[in-house]
Amino acid sequence: MAIFVLPGKRQAHNLFRPEGHPNGRHSGWDHGWADGYEVFAAHDGVVVSVYDGGGFNGGWGNRIVIEHAPGIRTTYNHLKTGTQLVKAGDKVTAGQRISTIGNTAVKDAHLHFEVYVNGVRVDPMAFFQRDLISAPSAPAAPDGPFVNLPSWWYTYSSAADAKAGRFQRGVGVGPGRFRIRGNDGGAILIETNRGNVWLHPKANAHITGVVATPPTPAPAAPAAPGQKYVTLTAWWYSYPTHSDAIAGRFKKGVGVKAGRYPLVGTRGGAVQINTGSGLVWLHPKAATNIS
Image 1: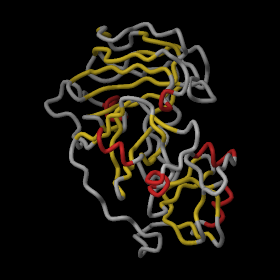
Image 2: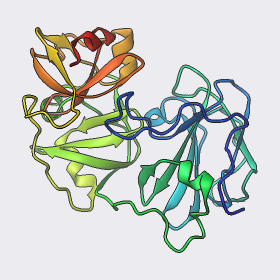
Image 3: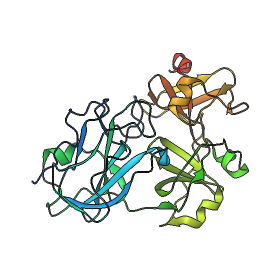
Image 4: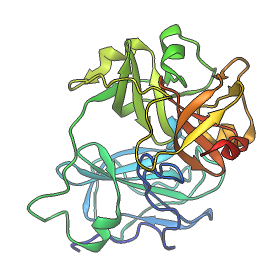
């Protein structure tokens, strides 16, 4: 089969949204919202890895990774424990059942499906519309730089916290390979399935590729066309994830001061802003301050 087949019985209802989207970034497609539905391979390929240990696992939960062509992989996440029907090295065909929808690492059962091209997550839509596997040139994506974490690492909501080692117990990522989005004084900003987070400077030892240090954006920079801002008249608590912001699970002393911050996006009512040293989430009440 030349084009992808749906990995779940139900049509995807929460589609890919790029960084900076008004409704917040979403790195793949969600299928289901019902425990027990079958999960299928989207295309012929070889199973790269299978995780069936339950728990958080960097936000993925139980996970299967399949390679369909050099540099093109799909991942199937939040799978039900004990239902993985394949193992690393197995060959699979399009539409073959490989697992069952679950809710590992998330509250509501669903399949989170992603497509990677050279290590970068891309919108799956094109793969369901035309043959991009056997085509002479697959969609281009930059190769690196990446951080290859051999184990679980603490993550931080700002570069300052990362450099000072001010961690929040139980908040972290890994093991895994994460794309680098920035560097501030040694602290590393990486992309995860739950947003961008910072790592301690010691993570530099695990970098592959060349890291370009981008200029740090200032909250009060001149407005770009269409850019929206969040104006805070007082100090606000900030959160590392949108779910923490919605639930109000704050860490005492962690927040942002009064100022005008570029709006990155919203998700479920929570508001994501760029503080100049990293991306953080604010409680949905901050939405009244968007202009």
